[in-house]
Image 1 (cartoon, rainbow, N blue to C red):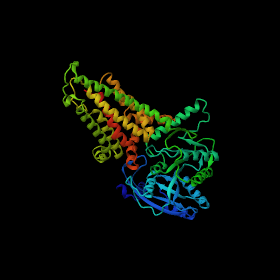
Image 2: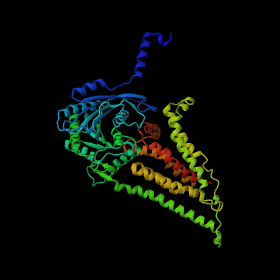
Image 3: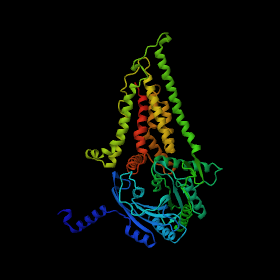
Image 4: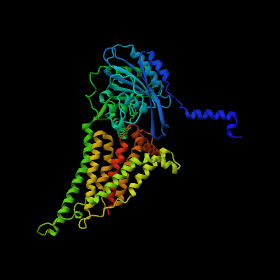
Length: 561
């Protein structure tokens, strides 16, 4: 008698298999279409599918397929040349169903008004950011991530602004705003000011990074709380992740925010009517735009919703760190020049100087091997984890996501153990010129990378400069080599990521143990690779193809023979 011989067990197993193969929650597409049509919208659907490079264990998905539903409210007083978007992302569960209900209620209310000068798109996406990316690519007729989706049957005008809504309950105690987008992009500051204005007008409690706004800036508690909020924003922006559906709109020059309703134990309680009034006020103000938001800042840091730090105040900090690299490179160049002059005129004897052979020059030939090996290690770190995941799962008892992470760590550690010291063609009269020339190249390479990163994502550039610049300036094959090696390891890109995770949870007042921090670190590695291949996040290629090879050059300088 086997397991399937019993009909009761057979039916139970069939139900179990059916439950495992079917999603626990699916978007009610037909119901949404009927409801949107009943309020007078033009309703369209879009199907999409995406095969991830490896299984996403965080969201438990690999072969993703879904349907987006959107309705268009045509402007009665203007042609369809401009539009606004209200979007609700839905995941694998129904935690955002309250936001869908509020979206439908706002659509019915907006339909009865006659003052709209812009089309309004009410968008409900499936599978969170994947559905949003599929809709945006189809709307703008591009394909930058390899998403397979059906073309859109209905379009409105050029999107001027967008608001993403996430509600976990029909009662909220505060509205938290997320501004960090893909690769550290930020919306125009005027959109954030508009949100804060209507929250204050409606009496809504608004938060930033989940933190209440400081009330008293004259005491010590106010600036400390503002510093905590600012550090949280720096860490979230440096990650390069889109912290909400709005983050993908920013790629297409659409100013967007994500509003999250928080239901905590605070004494302030608001229903969805108050949230709806704030959203209606924002859309009415955006409806009056004559041109895109461009007057205010796009580059800023926020210690609070009512205060900001502009680029003119924080950019000099990164500039001074890069100045250290420039001065150190200038010092090395002068030392190399003095050493070359000393070789050309030994003992100061008069007479014509004899030209040195190539092996007696600056030592550029000795730099080829470490430069090529370091860049090859970076290329292997970028390519091999995803390509070799299936081979790893065949020979080791690991899943695909675990194979990707373990391959990353193995290649990263192998870069430290490889014999980069293949340079043997150095001057016997000036043996220090080889490592000095290599460090000069590495300093210039690092300064160029950090400068470019700081211009696009200041938080990431400043965080990397704060950790890497001191160790890079001190690295040399003389002196306390063990101390320099420990400093280099502690300021490597991987160690910076691990330390940032601990700092982030500490600022959130949810500290981690060492084991929990390590597990979060492994999950962050997998998510970083996955988001690069899925959404085009640039943190992973920047670290693997740029900063990691550059860091290996300083490691090579430290162990120069």
